[in-house]
Length: 77
Image 1 (cartoon, one colour):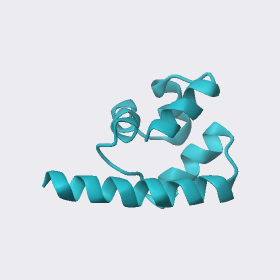
Image 2: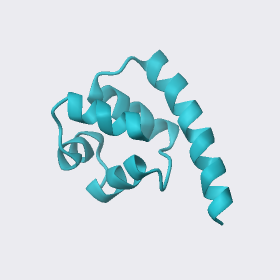
Image 3: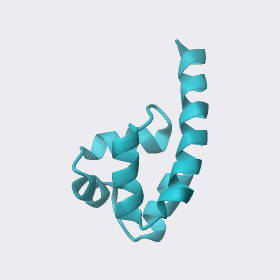
């Protein structure tokens, strides 16, 4: 999720800082950013809130990203 990394960097947060704000592990944030896994809706909401992204914007982007990630994961396995 390239845009997630960009938003995190624009917010001036490290992966560890974002992970702490959301209540998940730093490795999980890294995996989201590399596109290895997609966050649940609840986690995505927490990420959006921590990054200061509006819920409408984040929901739309996350739904598109989630669908893309799921298709890529299916291709790998």
